[in-house]
Amino acid sequence: QQPVQSPQAVILREGEDAVINCSSSKALYSVHWYRQKHGEAPVFLMILLKGGEQKGHEKISASFNEKKQQSSLYLTASQLSYSGTYFCGTEMGGGSNYKLTFGKGTLLTVNP
Amino acid sequence: SAVISQKPSRDICQRGTSLTIQCQVDSQVTMMFWYRQQPGQSLTLIATANQGSEATYESGFVIDKFPISRPNLTFSTLTVSNMSPEDSSIYLCSAGQGDQPQHFGDGTRLSIL
Image (cartoon, rainbow over all chains, first blue to last red; front, top):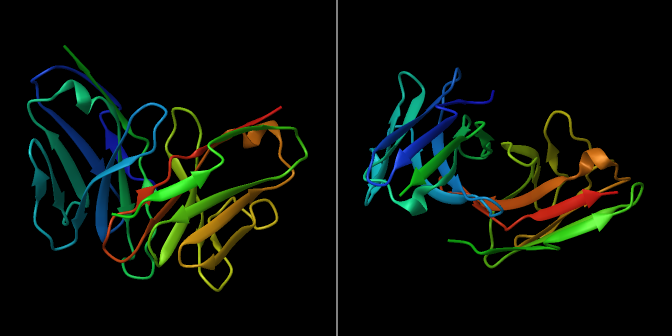
């Protein structure tokens, strides 16, 4: 079951904040967030585990609401380097059933 | 984090031919995965490469079309067989285990003429 990401696209000016959401209709074990720049491989940002705490580093953080099966990625004081497509990948099984289903992505553009 | 090397980085192939993509990880990992990504689209899991056993394929992908090998804990190959223009895509391998993140190779950009 593919998770639903919103918004599909967002345009920011440098220094503005953004929130990207990822929701699933199925119970989740973990949510993984990636950023992919054009022509490059996806780069891991963070992982949210069931029962875990909100993760974050510097100006990018994320939360996981287990009751709603939703995760949100928070980008604060955006920089030009934040531009790219953000994907959430959801894992339902955990343990040996360790496979990710990715959302359709959110295209983030940060302008000067 | 694991460093993943994938080759070739790109190729242009004739329809009806086959291409084998290699994926090398710099450390032993339990699980390796193969994805396909159309330009501007999401990542679609083709299969999980299992060491010592057959790969586990996702719905819509079959072993005859995408045979996979996993001879050890650091290496895997994906073959795209009897290629048609519809197989033109980016193919990515990734590796991970347990509650650790998956890391991706740089991908193979495949064009079929």
